Amino acid sequence: MKNYNDEFIVPIYKEEENIKELWGSGFFIGSYLISAAHVFKESSQYFVKYNNKYYPLKNFIYRKYNKYNKIEKAREDLQIYYLKDIKSPCTLFQGTYIWGTTLCLDGYSFDEKKKKENRDFIKETIKDNAYGYENPKKPNRLINCFSIYPSAKSGNSGCPIIVGNIVYGMIISGFVGENTEKYGSVAIRSDYINKILQILKSR
Image 1: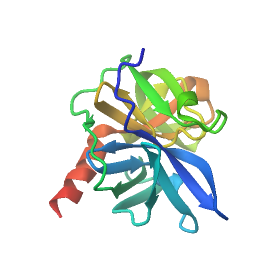
Image 2: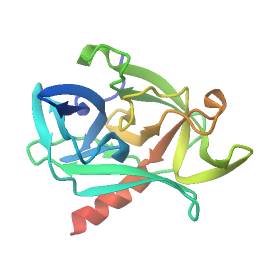
Image 3: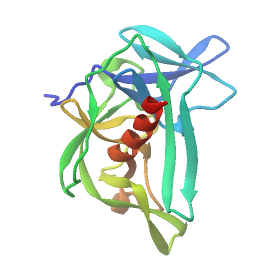
Image 4: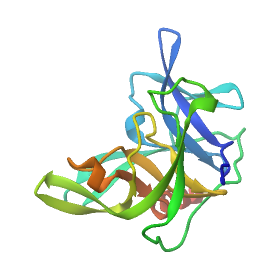
């Protein structure tokens, strides 16, 4: 039994030559669609599917993609749209992360049939702070991120880590460094996403 609100976890499709292909995942906080920036490329048209309707994603209101910022040791991989016709009750977690907490990851992976009922449902564990590499022998802690275990799959990028209506983070990478089993997946922290949303709302 799912212990979270899955209505506002949505698939993102890329369209080329009038063919829509499942390309990633996203979720709504209020009317804001949150996903990972690396899911989107400028040359393609994207849609989000909600309640059996495709909504075109034309103009993002925020985008930042930085694989690894050497100065701040941060992973920045966030893209946000505003869709006024959709309103989600989901909120972002604001509190202290406790390592070992079991949460849920739900998204749309490439190796599953492209239907809602076949999407991923995984119980995930917050492992510890996420680590990235300039040199595989010298891991650097990544701020704004944490690790989960086990690892996410292709297509899960942009999907939430969630319990009830509360989102704890968003998947941006299926692994960190070279050891997936040891380091798990990278998730952007909810407080970082919330900081960006508050800036957008104040404009």
